[in-house]
Length: 341
Ligand code: 13P
Image 1 (cartoon, protein in one colour):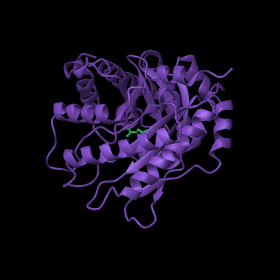
Image 2 (cartoon, rainbow, N blue to C red):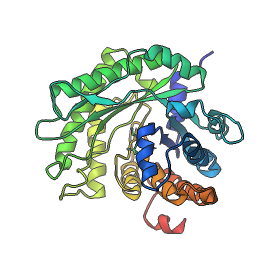
Image 3 (spheres, rainbow, N blue to C red):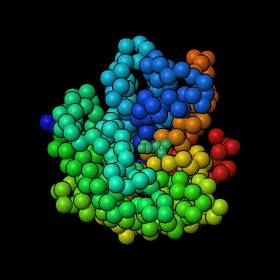
C-alpha cells in the first residue's frame, strides 16, 4: 500500500529539519562547477553529491528530504549502492525535480512559463518506482516595469496546480514553488516583492483549490519577501521576517503542513538569519523550514574543489550550514553560533 500523502508531507517538514535542494540540472551544475574549475562530468557530479548524502551528521539530524535531478535518482555511489538508498538510510525522503524549465512566455518579453506537463503522468509512475516520494516544480516570476503580468501569474499558477494534482494521483507529494526572483534591479525593493509574492501565492492557491489538490499533502516552497540583490534599499532582517510572515498568514491556508523556503541567491548567513527571525515570531500555523540549494551548498562546493582529499572538509562545511539552518527552524540561531561551531 502507498504511504499517505499527509505522512510524507509531515515528514518533509519535521521539526528541526529541512530539505536539501540538490536538483541542479546538468546546465546549472555546470555553472556551479565552473566557479571552482571542476569539469562537469557524470563522475564528478556523482562524487560531489555522494559527499553530501554521506555527510551523516547533517543528513541524520538536519535533512528530511533531498530533491534530485533525474540523473541522480538512477545513479549509484562509487561502491555501487544506489544513491537513493544512501539517502533513505539517513532517514531522508528522496524527491525529484520534474519540471522541464522556465521557457519564454509568448507575447510577454522577459517573462516565463514553466513547462513539463506533457507525459508527466507516465514519468511520475517511473519516478515512484525508482523511490521518489515527493516532487518539485518551479515557476519563475520576474519583477520589472511591466512584470509580473496577469498572464504570467495565471499561466504559472495553473501549471503548478496541474502538476500538483498529477503528483497526488501518483502518491507523490508536490512541492509547489512559485519563485519571485530577486533580480529586478535597483527599483525592485521589498515593497514590490511583497506585492508580487502576494499575487503569485493567491493565484496559486486559487488554482490548487480549483484542481482539487489536497493541501494537507503538499509543501509550499516560496521566496522570502526581500529586495533585489542590487536594490540600494535593503530591508532589515526583522522587516524581511515580518513582511514574509504577513503575506504567508494572509494567503496560505492552515491546512498546508509546511513551508520550505528557497534561498534564491541570498548569502548563506542571510538565508539562515531570515528563517530564524521568522520562526522566532512564533505562533505560526505551519512549519517554516528550508529547502535551500545554494545556501546549503556554497561553502561545501568551495571547500571541495573537485578533489578527493577535500571530501572531509566539504562534508564539514555542509554539516555546519545544515546545523545552522536546523537551529533557525526553531528560531534559535544567532551569529555567535557561526563561530562556536
Ligand atoms: P536556491 O536555494 O539556490 O534558490 O535553490 C532552491 C531551489 O530548489 C530552486 O528551485
